[in-house]
Amino acid sequence: MCGIVGYVGSEHAKEKIIDGLKRLEYRGYDSAGIALPVNGKIEIRKHVGEIKNLEKIIGGDDYDAPVGIGHTRWATHGAPSDINAHPHGNQNNSVAVVHNGIIENYQEIREWLQREYGVAFKSETDSEVIAHLIGIYYDGDLLKAVNKAVEDMRGAYAIAVIAADEPDKIVAVRKDAPLVAGIGKGFNLIASDIPALLKYVREVYFIENNETVVLTKDNIDIYDEKGRKVKREVFHVSWDADAAEKEGYEHFMLKEIHEQPKGIQDTLFKRLADDNSINLDGITMTKEDIENFNKVYIVACGTAYHAGLVGKMVIEKMAEIPVETDIASEFRYRDPFVDDKTLFIAISQSGETQDTLAALREAKAKGARIMSVVNVVGSSVARESDDVFYTWAGPEIAVASTKAYTTQLICMYLIALYMGKTKGAIDEDYYNLIISELKALPDKVAAILEKEKDIEKLAKKYYHKEHIFFIGRGLDSGVSYEGSLKLKEISYIHSFAIAAGELKHGTIALMDPDTLVVALATQDFLYEKMVSNIVEVRSRGARIVGIAKEGKNEIEKVSDEVIYVPQCIDEVTPVLAVVPLQLLAYFIAKERECNIDKPKNLAKSVTVE
Ligand code: F6R
Image 1: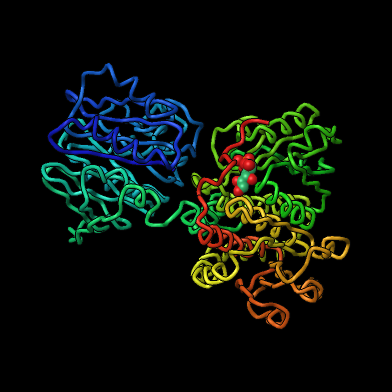
Image 2: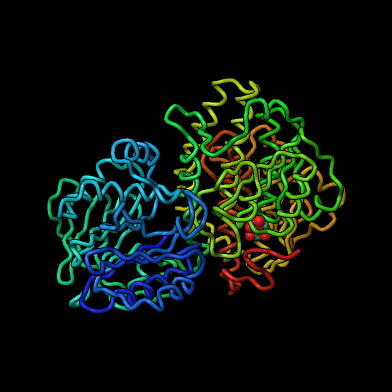
């Protein structure tokens, strides 16, 4: 996720900014840059890759200034590159901007600036429009120009701006993206995140939504939307740098579990227009292509593969087309039946998983159309695909994938709905029903997260178990695989997932009083069958944790514990049902004192075969 750092004081800004950016490295980024006002002009230096690449190119520069802004970029609009990196300047670099977030109407602004002012854009980013807008409105008063530019901008963002003619200040704005001002003595700082400030300050002001802040070396003035000065309480940060990176959460995994409502919301609303239609910005697949497909392969590894299991069921149901979900390392060597009537969907958080990439290349060579669902813009999988549905989860740092999975599910629904509607396989009412159920998910996930203490209590009760099974039917069977993987990878407990109806064909032999079974029963039309499966394992002595929708209380009679998720239509329950499983895995691993964010033997991105 992008990071912002700004310094204004009387010492060398360059050093402070680079230092602040380094403290944000843990969040993931693909390029970095810095802007300083020097001799009536703004010097901008930026480079793709690590901050050390930026340091190399500025190493020889003898310029510096007592004010400046810096940025680490996580690409959204436009691939990672030197040109797309921030800061962005206006035409003559008299102002420079760093930006986190999204400018939704940037296309409109871009066209207007080109038409009315002949602006020549250098980058593919949405952010560059901000620099040009401010440049056009600037007449010697940076605050005024920024306020005017903000009136034209729609979206969720945080920006920090400097002007060559006012080399003693930074103006920053917050709208739905974090911004915090650090209070120094003879200097002040602005940043998107507290860790960037901690080496220099402990006292901060949290900037609120729709506020503008002007920083000089001796003052921090905060203004509300109407331009009135705001008095803000000073907040003393007592966290150490490690806790600050995790925003107070004990582990990145827990932080990322809690980021799911936002990730779901962002992934959904990036693709949903006001009239509920799915906007296909950047997708070139036509109606004819969709009608031409006679099969779909979804190919991925690990958690992404589990998202594909759910994807199979929803695409088959909504788009009425056969779908096969396969493990990438198997697909690539089994000579699958692929031709130019095949849609191949690769799912990958990192976009760099070697097996997924090799499977994609195999399918491409055989003529398939390639679509991918990826979290990292500009990654190999994204670059080699015909079309990309991005997940807007933000960087995932914990090795165990959580928010990537739920946002991958959202993409599966969007793809299924789009294909189904285009083919006429679903009617308008059903389409609108699923969309409204999807829109309700962020709040419902947040409601489950509020019950995390209950799940922690369960974890304390069962963390010593040696074997934990996960069972479910229909969509729940896909989710049970994910629950089991989460548990085993971070707690090292032996775990196994199986479609509940398959138990009696062998696996039930393993059930005994030492076994814990997590039974997912969120599918209304399969509920009674699940209750029977629970009875089967319970009669062999197993303990049961049931997962069901609120109001489906029958399960209490056959379970030792029940975790309820909010009511919703069966099709979208996987997004809810997985959340208690993630929390259960997390709290069990915590009880067992495991290294949760970096489990043994695992890497975040598997770039080898
Ligand atoms: C499990 C996990 C892995 C990844 C798998 C694929 O928590 O993170 O199973 O899902 O290695 O990685 P990506 O999605 O980057 O292709």
